[in-house]
Length: 316
Image (cartoon, rainbow, N blue to C red; front, side):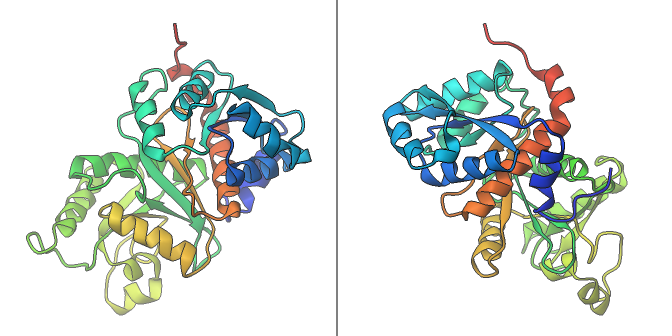
């Protein structure tokens, strides 16, 4: 499968399948979420089901004729709207869930409470996909939104989740740069360099399969071949990373917000680690980023549908 080269490739790739997936929006009376699903429906990416306060949704839908005929399920309580939405995913009545006017921690707690039903495989983590700032290809960033201060063992799972997304996007041998502030190992002064060094050694032992993991790398060394050569940093990952693995949520979130705020980049973010992805875009994300996140989840749901069917089990 040829690798997708840009975020614009995502909606087009989903639409080419000819069968829109079904997204259930929990606490759906949220203007940005409705704008995203309206555009996704227009592009043939996803058909929405809206779970939330029916009266508020009727008012919102009256202003959006493009969503006429959309299925609405009345549930005014946000937590119960999440529960009912997850029921639909478990029963196979929806392909994935998108967050509306509900806090991310409320949604993730509900997912973890039903992790067996939802096919949660170890750790949930956030993967963001954006257009590479320097080259015509995609760049992934993890974890900017879920795991606050991941241990070494959690970083193994975080990388594995991101590698699965990269492969689904057509990157056959993902290159993972484990980020820090320097390429030098400083075990006590900068513990993130120790984790990066161990992760790179685990890669050489075959822990990450055919993915390449290197580090520690400062950001410039991870993404710029010129800067890597100038600093004399060699290896299969230096200057050519497909995935940036942040040392913690603070660094990851700052990098994410720098891309969206200073550079005006659109970023598609999803939570993975369950049988189906979750769309949990930030309230501050641009409408276009929300659309790309929805398209990314639809694309992944299609790529993983066969494997996911084997891991789901029906609720009693």
